[in-house]
Image 1 (cartoon, rainbow, N blue to C red):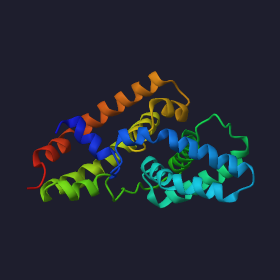
Image 2: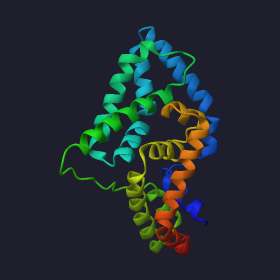
Image 3: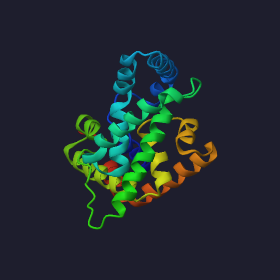
Image 4: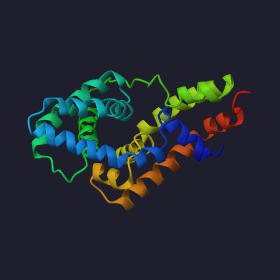
Length: 223
């Protein structure tokens, strides 16, 4: 397993949904979103519940990984959906809902992080569930499982140390499987800038996590 493959494994959530499957599902999801928004604007309150159910887990996961604070992720997600509820009447039908929700989530996370940085003595909380726990338990030897857990914690710390734009781009790409165009929409930048952010983030992460990645690769699958 290459260094790049290893870091992609850790960065992805433990899920049976592949990047290709996620991409192929984009259009139906957009259609479902557009239909739900139209129904909501026509007064159907159950339509917003559909949007909430579809994106709640992703928004919480994004907030947790961005802020490294699972204890505030649900609170931040609640704020995101309150804002979405309030501002959907101004939503453009031709726009994509998912990037818009993540843009709102990113802004709330940035505000929380900046507020925390201005409070002396604030402690970062380690994320206790590395992204590849499920995958490691199923496919790796016990020794590799331990190494993957360590790598997951190291990745959380390394992500937290990345510049904000690189961290956002990396999480949205490798965890949420957003396209370059969608990430550009979330960040308010160009596709070429997104590609540059991802390349810099991957270079930094591989440089910082090289020893742990090599340990996981050397341990290999369980026999």
